[in-house]
Image 1 (cartoon, rainbow, N blue to C red):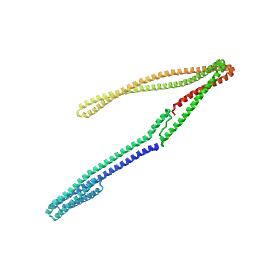
Image 2: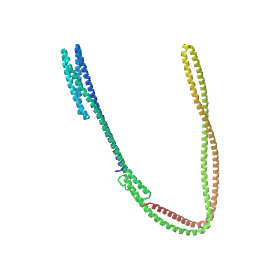
Image 3: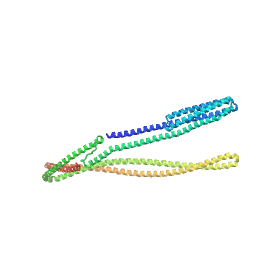
Image 4: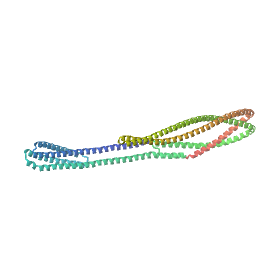
Length: 552
């Protein structure tokens, strides 16, 4: 399996586990919600049904009491109304009991837990007993109604105890059913908690399994990828140290195996090359030694042949060599002088641009100083205005005091005037306080302006000083450029003179040139061959050292 396939498989496994865990969690949440909805829906419906039954029984009692009272007072109309109301209440109660009994039977068949199934069965039995008691109560009341229609007071009162007893039995059965429902609600709450706990535990276990699988996948991937890479790094390190005698064992069918086989092939090629280089270097070293010995013998004979010619042409050669050096040096000096002239021109342009920039900075600094001075004058004008406002506020304060005195002297008629005077006094005090704050702020601004003026003046002075230094540098660079041009002209004259001298020397050496040429060519060739042989020997020794570095 390839590395990419392993990584993709690991990622796919983790994704599948997370997806399965998410789907399982959603299913568990759906089960919990379905269970809670089922329990709550049934319990609430049952509670409402029992409440309706209790309400109907209460109305039944009220209607029967009204019936008996109407009979005892001789109110036939109320007797008929109470009879009708009682029968409606009894029918509603019976209908509610029967419906809830059927619902309890239905709930028993598909309840959430066995305990709730038993409780629904018990509630069904209790409701059935309550229905029987209610039927008995209805029979007793019908007997009482017959006595009421017959006008039998004694019969009406005689059956009263049985009616009360049967009604109490009905209420007791309904109460038992309510208690059973409360227990069922508690069991439903416990069942909901059990379902929630089971879902939570199963989700946590699934998450733990996912984490374990993820760790296993990560460890497996690391073992299958990182370990071969570490082995490759050690192998490459040994190759870098010159050990070509080893190979790597990672030669599988994946990318890492292909890399291992490639590295082994590379090491094999390097081993072959090193072996061939070592043999060729040894041969080259031996051949170089022989060539060096031969060239040294030839050089000795050539030197003997050149001795006579060299003594004659030595002086001319020295003169020629000196003239050539002078010409070359002069050309180099001319090139450097021209380069220096170009640099001085560039420096002159830079200094000119710097001077212009310094002038612009000085003008801007002077403009800033002018604006700051104008701002200082405006702040002084604002201070004068504040002094005027302060004077007005003091006069307003005095005027308000006088108005207060006049209002006090006017008595009741001056009360409104006194209020106005008080307001004027408050406004005057506020204005006075505001002017003090503004004066304090203006003082801070004035001090900042004074500091800015001093800094601006200092900046102008420094810019002026920098301008003077820039002008001095400009003059110096101009002088340097002039001197460089003069030196260029001087060296050009020197080169011209040297060239003329060389022409004369060449005319003097024409006679010796033909004799000297053959010997010089032979000597030069011999020296070059000797030098080449020496270089080749040195190179062969270095190659031997390099090949000895590799362990085959």
